[in-house]
Length: 451
Ligand code: IMP
Image 1 (tube, helix red, strand yellow):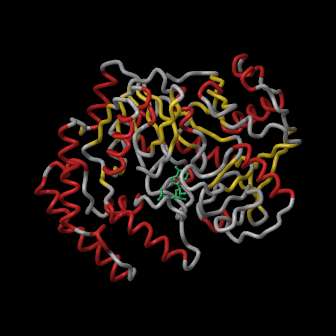
Image 2: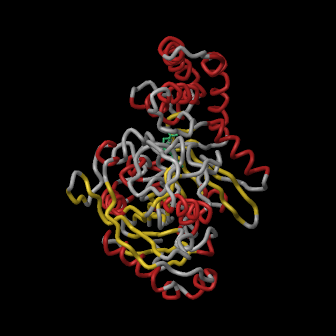
Image 3: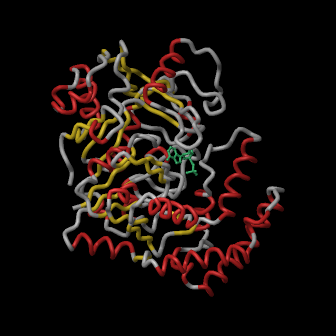
């Protein structure tokens, strides 16, 4: 049995909590895309674990797999593993032999290019982890894969080809100082060492065959998507996207499992409102965040006050940077689009408690673009940026004893909250599997468990 967890919006939907709850009976938790751009905090037995690359299930004793669709920064990987061991855990992590490696020059180039783009307000607002440049090298057939780290001749040959190119790019195209992050010999020595460690610890696997074998043996698998649908390189809001496929199709290519296997159960995780980190359009945005909101203007009055209230109640600040996230009302064209693109079989809606206490809660049921009603997400930034939301208004629901509600179950939710949730299910044609009413795993109401 396999369940795939996908973010339905722009990341930060609370996937970690849902992975936690639905991953409970899973034996293996695998990531299929992204790298150490996906910061998450796991709280287990009162202890806090901060992770960005290692799948969160590793904290709970599951086998963690980084699939071939991931980009792996070995410095981060071994830092995280060492830290988990210091905290008394014994994580079992496998890395796909086909996964690509993130080098320090990728991080350097990520920063350099964002800087250059910012001169014309074109920066994406990346996490600066070198994710885009690493995927560029993968597509450009000049990447180094995890298996290459264990073969010194191949590693040297690949680095001898690629490092001088990267150095020239930094210095001659961007006019930046290259420095030690482009030092071939130092990189070769350090990364050969990581190869030895991967080998010694028996971490490298043929991911597809490994995962298939576990399914054959009767194990339950959870495939954990990072980021979200609208950050998908193909289906997202290009160019304000990450460089991989968080949608369910990425779970097949990024693990080596067949589409039918990864599509068996696909849970779309939705936040009851919307947040966005970095730049790009956001038709339902309330207020705005200077530096991130395109053409931000100060003093948006009531909208700004609503945004602040949701941001504070929902803790909408970047985990690493502490930057305020942009917030807005739920965007249904986006969620419908996500449901179709990934074939959601179930929804998990989080942060229902965050919206408590408002007189009115809104949902964009469609957009208006050039005088026409539009139910779908347009393909370009220009069109999406020009969309005005058409809102449906719901009566708000009161502050509630959420612990009591979780114990009593779905029917104990305030009636107005249920009306809101049932509308989302109707509009997307997807059943509700879970409702989150607080940050802890015990504050999730499970209606249907996919495993
Ligand atoms: P990158 O993945 O670092 O290249 O960043 C590309 C875009 O994806 C930027 O807008 C980031 O803010 C966004 N992004 C990447 N990872 C996350 C995440 O875990 N949560 C929310 N946004 C993310």
